[in-house]
Every structure is written in structure tokens, then in C-alpha cells.
Length: 163
Image (tube, rainbow, N blue to C red):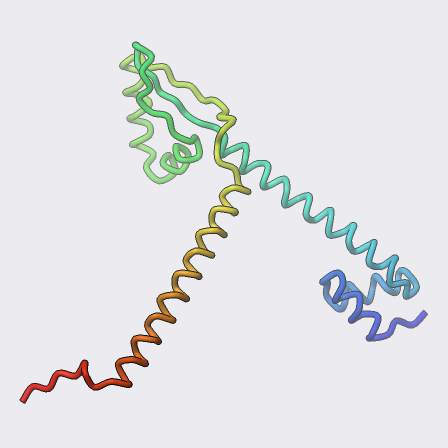
């Protein structure tokens, strides 16, 4: 069966794929739009699963913490392991010196999983909320500025003349 441009456009609008992918899928399914939609959604579902793997990895990494306690079990340092790894990459000698100092002073070094840690989804949500707040505030400032400019252009009371 010959695939029409209207069928390709309809499939692209429903599933958000390229012309080439829409055309090949329609040809494979003999122009059946519903079968093509189902097939492409299954493919997209598999692609989204791989994104989930990265999110799971990031969540697991963010939940790991490094704790350093002295002889009296007072916590000296309790920071995310990801921060230690980044610092290790940037300043190798600083982290190495810290570990040697902790070992010499008989501190207990512990890596553990914090169940109340930050995850990727909460970070995304917080970022979206912050961006939205900034957007609203900037719109308020711009509208207030426009009102002030309109008022200053309308009246000459704000003019200062120096002769």
C-alpha cells in the first residue's frame, strides 16, 4: 500500500517522530495508522527506560554519604560522596591529605546510604519552581518599570533643570 503525506503528517503529530521514521513504520504496517502509533510508542518506551537507568544511577549516587567521626563518635564531616568525588577529581591532594589526617588521628570513616537524601526528581522539581518564581518576579519588575516610565514621560515634575 502506498503511504500518503497526510498519513505521515498525522503520525508525526501524534508520536513526534521524523518523516523518515514515520514513513518506514507506515510502510511496514501497510499504512495502518494505529499499528504504526503503537509500534512507535513501544520504541519510545524502550528509549525512555534507558533514561530511567541514568536517573536511577544518579539517585543512588546522590544517596551515598561519607561520614568521618572522631574517637568520641562526634561527627566531624558528613557530606555527599558525590561531592568528595568531584573534589577528588579537582583537588586530589586535598582529599588525600584529609584521608591521611583522618587515619592518623584514628577517625572512623564510613560510607553509607542516606534514605532521606535528595533525588534527581526533587532537584528537577525545585529547579522548575525556582525558574517559575524568577519568571513571575521578572515580569512584575518589567511591568512596574513600564508603569514608572509611562508616568515619568507624562509629567514634567520629575525634571531637574540646572542652569
